Length: 381
Ligand code: FE2
Image 1 (cartoon, protein in one colour):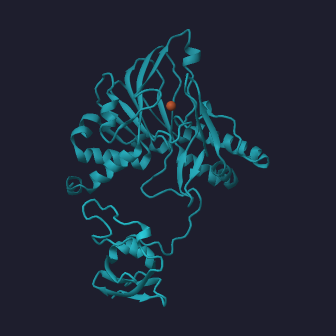
Image 2: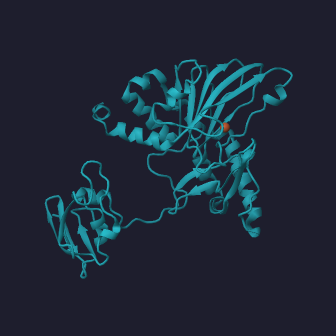
Image 3: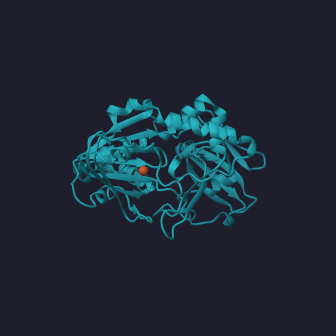
């Protein structure tokens, strides 16, 4: 049998659960999270009151347990609210300890070249027509931060069909989409044949585009494979090698800028390794082409900062970190641009390569995935 005990002043209660310890809850937290029809809309789940509508000196007058429900009477409102004990357990905040900086949220799996043969891949026509297939592919994208689609049409703007799977295009000064055309011939091979260092796109935007899609329409040049690196794994590796270097890149902001066209001056000031206030690794920004002068690192720490920056780049360049794949016409890949870096490998022959790219937002992708996961069709599989 569960047991409940009130603090003497009624400011909190303590729930002793059969076989699974004790959880404490504050009166104000419980009242704020009441699920009754006056507090929260039964239709859309949105809250109908503001905190200012609740008494500051709120207390629990009484509390009792009936089967799997906790019944709480709040004073001075004299209001009784029922809570599902299962819900309280799932939302408890008591006893949580701070994890080491750089922890990664559940559901995310970091990777290196070992993922080469297990890239989340699906057929575009299939995920367009089969919700379970779409759910499975999006689940892989959420887990690994990137995915590939094959069997798509070879036509202008086909990449919009990819974005339509989960959300909306994010238009920028580069347009709704941008062209990536490369002519490789013997006279300019030395130039265009160069590979690009793996990077995240557009770190000078605030917020950065969180999804990037690159769709292949033509590919006749040998080489020029696409390559991706897990920025979260790179950051973890840096932390494991040298905590001070990890700290300096997460504690101080770098600066990024793009002003390559008339009327555009995009600037941002954000760390290369971004953590939430409780230390969760939330984003990586790495792009040497758009790096501006770093001015937010104290003089005493700048030399260390540059050592850390150099080492992070070396880890990113390490071949054991990369997954490579070739895109044929009608194929594309998508990356979480806050996590996975991308690049193009060098060419070894002449020809043409034509890709179209666009940006989108990952909240839409996660929303579509969560909705599919909650749907009876997906659950029935
Ligand atoms: Fe890029």
